[in-house]
Image 1 (tube, helix red, strand yellow):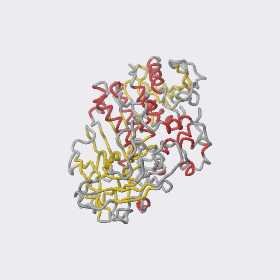
Image 2 (cartoon, rainbow, N blue to C red):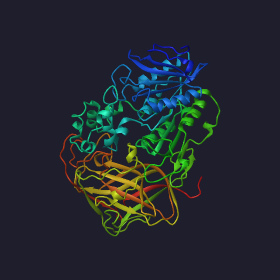
Image 3 (cartoon, rainbow, N blue to C red):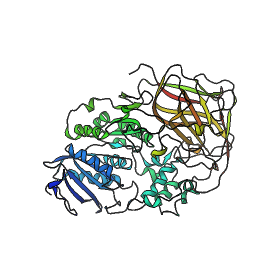
Image 4 (cartoon, rainbow, N blue to C red):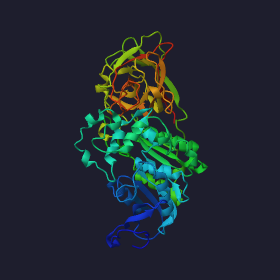
Length: 571
C-alpha cells in the first residue's frame, strides 16, 4: 500500500476496499516498546489530518471501527492503537501509568508520517478518554484538540467518591486483568456474593491475581499513588481546546464537570480556555448520544445527538481550520430533563443560577416514604431529629442514577428503596409552579452517629403525580473524609457534625404537580462499598458494626438541600 509507512504484518488488497488499511504497524515508544496500531486512510490523496484512539479494549473493537469508517469518509486518517501491554502491543499494562508518555510519543510519530498533514486529534470513551487528556499536557506540536467522552479528571475520582470506593467500577477491572479481556471467564461469577466478600482487599484473589485492585483498596486517600498521574493541579499545562461529552447518568459525569471547569478556567493558553466545550445529555456511560428509552422515563427524540458528526464538526475547525461556526456557539450545552429540551450557556454553573435552600422538616419521623418528612423553603423551628440504624449486612441497594452498568442506571423508580425504614424521605408539597434545577446539588446535614466512621448519602428525586419517584442525582460522603481526602479524621461517637454531601450535577424541570424529594441514608450498594462502621482502615478487614444515626433539623442545626434554581423565563 502506498502512503502508509511503518512495519506491518501485511497490507490488504485495496482494490475492493472503501479505504486504505494497514494492520499492526509497530509504533515505537521512547523506551523501545512498540505499540500495535492499525492505520486507516481515505481511498486516495493525502496527506490528511489524523485522529487517534488509544484503547485497552482492542483496536478492532466494533464500536470504534464504525466510528473510524465515518471519520475516514469525512477525509481523516485514523490510527487505532492497542495500549501498552494490551492485545497486540508489547510491554506490560499498568493501568493508567504509561498513557501520558505513550500518547505523546504516538502523537509525535503520527505527525511525522507522510500521510499526516501535521494536524492530530483524539477520540474515545471512558478509559479511552483518559488516554486523550493526559498526553495533551505534554503539548505535542501536532496535537490541535481532543474530544474525551465519559472520562475522568484523575483515577482517585474514578475509583473513589468522597472517600467511598465505587465498588462496581473497581471490580469491573477484573474483566481487564490480563493482556486480553476475560469477560467470558466471569460469566459464572456470583456477583452479589462477590460484592459482599470481606475483606475487600482480597475479595478477588480466588478468581484473579489483580494487583491494581488490591493497591486501589490500600490507597483509600488521595496520596502519591493517585497524584502521580492525573489532571488535578496540572490544567495549566494544557495548550489545546477540549470537547467534553458526558451524560447525566454517566458514573463519570462529576469527573466530566471537573475537567470542563478546570480546562476552561485553567488551561495554559487563551485558545484552549476560550474554545473548550461541554455537552451533557440524558445518557448513561454506555449509551452516550442515544434517544432510546432506558430507565422509567422517556426523553423523546430531542435527546439524540450524533456525537460522531459533532466530533467531525469539532475537528473540521480544529484540524482543518474550517470556520463552521462551532467556535461561535455557547461553551455549554445541556439537556433539561422534564422539559426535554436543550439549554446553552457560556458558563457553568449558569450565570442566572439562584441557589435556593430547601430545609429538612417534619412533625414526626421521616423514615420511609410513609413517614412525615417534609422538604420546605421555610426554615425549621424547634423540631425533633430523625433517627435510623444502618446495618452493613442490610445495605440500601443501588437503584438507578449514575451507575456504570446500563441495566441499573438512569431514571429508575426509587419507591422500592423509599419503603425501607433506614431511608429518611423528605418531600415538598405538590408544586404550584414548575421549577427548573440546573447545576451542582449539595446537601448540608447536621448529624451524629454511634460509630467512629460511617457514611451519609443524599439522593435527589422527581416524584410524578402517579407516584413514580425517579432518581436524578446522588452522592455519598464517608465521614472520616468530611474535611479532607488526604488526611482523614475519625468522628467522636455521639458528637454532632456538619456534613456536606456533594450530590453531583443535574438538569431537570420539576413540573407543576410534581414533588421534589430528598432521600438520606447511609449506604448505596454495590455502587459504593459498605462502610463497616468500625473506623478501621477501609477494605482491610471483615469486622462489622451497626451504626445508629441521628439527623437534626432545628433552629440551630438547619439541615438543608441546596438546589441551583433557574428563574422562570431566563434564557
